[in-house]
Length: 103
Image (cartoon, rainbow, N blue to C red; front, side, top):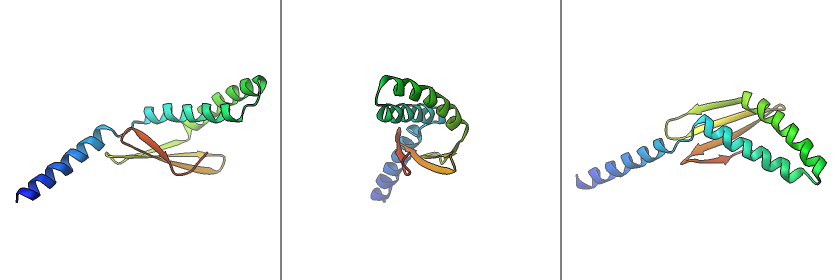
């Protein structure tokens, strides 16, 4: 019986930690903006490309924010972005995001 109580206590603590660290939709928006900025910076070779990339990146961010679906499972979340006839899936858990599909 003592082992059961210890196991149950550990399980409840784990669930509480997962619940407290489940990223919000706003957290995902911030994450995806940074990912887009990094992608634009990687693909930009010179200053003009970089400026053009920032402008298109800003437009892409607006389009992507409107195409995000969020499924909250209390201890983790699944985010899906539908963009250019593709679906990109990301899991949010423990204040981190894990991309299942790369951009």
